[in-house]
Image (cartoon, rainbow, N blue to C red; front, side, top):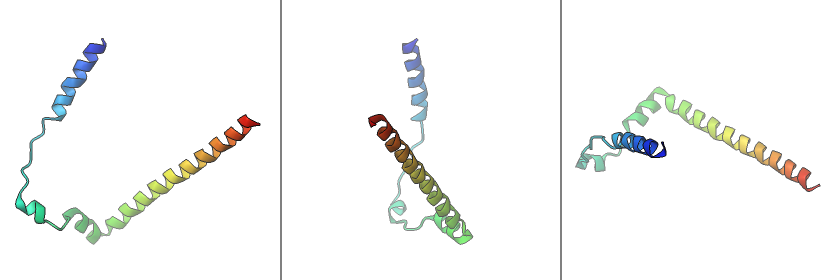
Length: 80
C-alpha cells in the first residue's frame, strides 16, 4: 500500500513539472516597470494591499507574543 501511494504521488508530481518554458528575451532584462504595481498604485489599491499585509504581520506578532507569555506562565507553574 505504501509503494502504491508513493507511485501515485510521483505520477502527480510529473504533471506539475509539465509546464511550458517561456523564453527570456533581452527586453526582460531591461524592463524597469512593473505594470501591476503601477495599476494598483493608480487605482489606490496598493494602500489596501499594504494595509492587509501589515494587519497579517501584526496578528502573527500578537499571537506569538501571547503564546510566549502563556508558555512562560506554564513553565513557572511547573517549576513551583
